[in-house]
Image 1: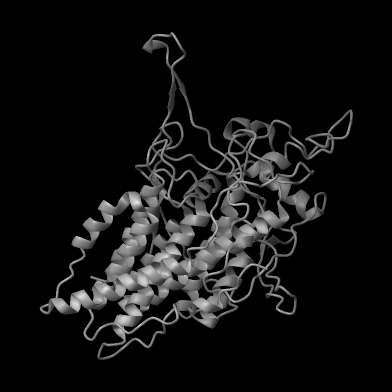
Image 2: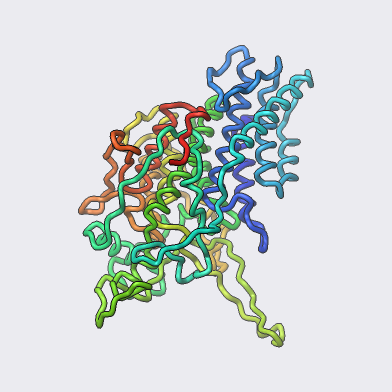
Length: 506
């Protein structure tokens, strides 16, 4: 049994369960920011535990520690026991309500050795690594919004009008966090200005492709069934029973790792790279989100005309690109529990059932978190498997493979309690195809503009050939989350997994 794949699976299950507890419980590592941070901590600890214990092997892997100053593992220390202790220790600290699960998984990990002292030495070293890793990130900011003052300016992000009490997720997390590994604090070029042709093209696209089904008769260029499927496939938004997007990207990488028969050494490095890249994606994407503070389509389409919104100026007509009643298909509230409302004094038979709505995520649009996470994770995997840095084209890494998204597995249901069908999806053009499709999928849900993922040309084709402008200070990755994620992945793989190089807040 590969201990890295085993404990990666446990970590993904912890992520899923964290978002599946009934109200009033809140996730312990809430949102894509903290869930990506948690997975980075766990996998970097597993990596260091492997490296320290493996150095004593007859043929060591040659990998170097992430954390500086770790002592040597005891002679003969069990690699498997070290990995198990590092994973168990970090997971238990990050998800304290799930300690029983981690105890069970530790007992089932198959740890055995004729010399029990080797197991103890491995366990002690892995436990030490876990404590050092947690201490290294103890000053990370949380995702709370206390003290955040939203802007009422035209074009600024405001809550989803269909979910007006949603608040603001992680407004300070990005700008106050130190990266796990990335050496440069990449920024993005600004999104198109309101009224620019690129902005208007994106508005018209999402107005038709992302509209709520009940409003489709009011829009041109309506969404195709395949596009609806793509939007749902990549979602992992309303995370009850399925977890957050970083879980999906790990699920993909697992399939590739297994198909390549990766050794535990290769998997220790691979999953540390992938999850460190997503940890840094959560930091740098959220820094840019609240820097540009761009409104989401649900506000931008409804208030496109200057007469609309808090700063509206008087007019007797509205611009044709405005739809004051527009709503998106929305990020899916998967497995949402229908809420029963019982008016005071009414018998049980008069209870009303309120369907939990789909929603627009509670943070600014630009750049797309999905696009950044997906590009960072999947490009880090591409680089690990030998795709050249700078390559922006198809690859063979998912050849003869397929993946069933938990959004479309024939078990999980939509917000009306209807089970969605099972869909088996392949990607003949590999992980690169996934990076592009994942980025564009958010338009089909109506929660993002296309430039939140990447720039497009006049025929709406993806433009991703631009290189990072390293001459700028800080370096500019381009337009959208995909270029940002690609830059993060290439930075990490080029410079290696070293804690001290992670760039801090400006």
